[in-house]
Amino acid sequence: MTNGLSEDTREKSKKISNKKYNAALAEMQVELVKVQEWVKQEGVRVALVFEGRDAAGKGGTIKRLTQSLSPRVARIVALPAPTEREQTQWYFQRYVTHLPAAGEIVIFDRSWYNRAGVERVMGFCTDEEYEEFFTSVVELERMLVRSGIILIKYWFSVSDVEQERRFSSRLTDPLKRWKLSPMDLESRNRWVDYSKAKDEMMARTDIPEARWHVVNADVKKHARLNCISHFLSQIPYTDVTPDDIEFGERPEHPDYVRPPFTTQNIIPEPYTPKPK
Image (tube, rainbow, N blue to C red):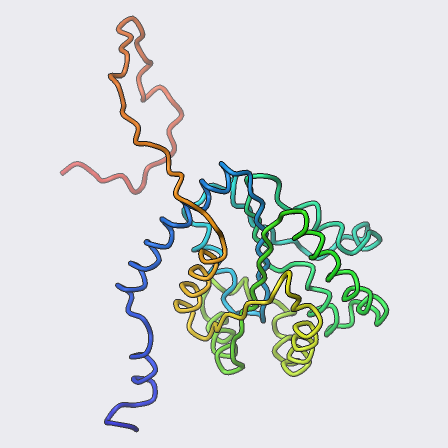
């Protein structure tokens, strides 16, 4: 106890209130729409890489970042494990095909850095493949940046205590139970191995052309706002919001009579309010 407050109470007092969080997020989402319109108009290509430990909150941040954007402009790429055929391809091949074209923002929910993380720790790649990855990825990212792509890399950092709490909550929440995979459980057992792999990855791929930006993710709402705010600061966008549109009178067609609504195959409506 300190100053009459428990540790939990003091920790909660440091967190942003729901009111302030929702207001800040809404304001940023307006700016994200401006970024979208600028990207479309200028033909800019943006690639975001989201990496981090399991349960670090990457998905929640991506959801808020893209919530108000068009899926035709902002695409999320979350690839499954490679197929047998993909395992015979050049390692980066299945990622390169998803890179943005003009006027697109692509968000990689995990990326080619799988090789430096889970594949290294779980023994899914050889030592030779691991070393080749580091040689190639630096050159690849430099090429992407030289080609004009805005490449931004985020690492979501979460403490072992907080990760354990989030894993535990997934056991009892039916809406999150699907997030807890055997691979997640194994990552829990190999915390130190993942830490070593992450440190090695940072040391060898934090290049001037494509720096790693670390997000303190122990408090989800803070992480979301801080990450989105940083992203906005990295894009040199201007407000190209179209001028206001005025609706004219809708033309009428008195000769056309639509068939009764009741003649259509309407789904059951158990939640339709009943007349009093």
